[in-house]
Length: 429
Image (cartoon, rainbow, N blue to C red; front, side, top):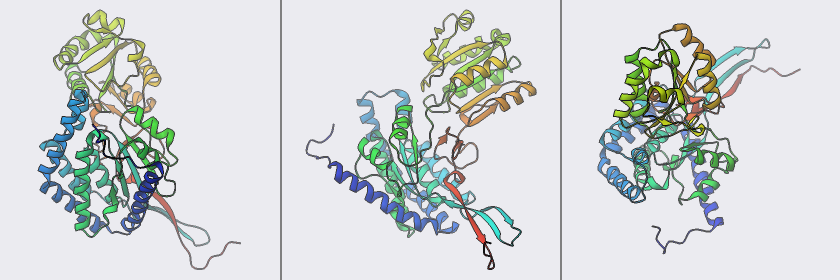
């Protein structure tokens, strides 16, 4: 409950606050862009050390957030996204060291060529500048985003969900203390001074101060940011991830992959939401797979042909195809061919993650070639569409908008390229 004694700032005052925050971030971005790799790596080590020293403070803050979320009646999936524990803090600690060990993309010459007039032309990677990240109840994003921005020479303004405010405040404090101890500007990692939707609306309109907005969360949040923004936005509306079980799919491999993809963490964007099963193998594949899923608490919503094999399945409706459940629910449809599976994916997919389980190399190649998604997977869990799992160290988000990135965004996706031209007196005729 909000404190009635707290008076919300006027629109003009809030606009001035947001502009001042972004102006400080712009100044910090100029400083970060000039740093060499050693200085950035030292700061990341300091961040890891500070996180380790403040572990109990961060966990206490997260316990505060969790208590409020339970009282508010949030779902188990929401609480899972919000929760921090020792294992997840250990993952953050490891991620900071992984990002430190990654090659620095800034200053990399990606191409170079000599023109007939003697000019040497190069394309060189540079930071984007100031990145605003708007996200919901995922406090791990705070450290992931800040670390990736720091290594790639970008300043960031982090606007996390109000449900995770105590956790995010503690984690931003960790980053700012480490930056200060490293002699770097604390404005390189900031949160807006005032919470609320109006602050987000103003933040994403800071043309000339904010270079890119990355929203992370539900479809409603991402659409709202996209509609209001006046600066470029990385879009990822939802993760409707399919698995096509080919007629040749190995039953034991199928059970391992599907159970992991659906039930390990059902509330995340790379969790499996729809199962497409080749009709020729359905009687072999589906019953044991359904038993595994039900044992894990998963509700099956099936087409008419699916329910003939699995009488206990709930009838699927049209709304269940193309739906991101983010919960222990999965839609199941029998299809007669690879073509039918691809047609379903093209109609209902979100270009996030698509999977085929098969022993037929030709079908695997056809699926990879014909399906468009930020990550297409053969014979492995959809949960691998993740920056850390794919070797990026961490990710700042997953883009399904194709420009300027497609898929998990790591360090390289937080840079752009400038042309550098070397001459010895040439002039244009």
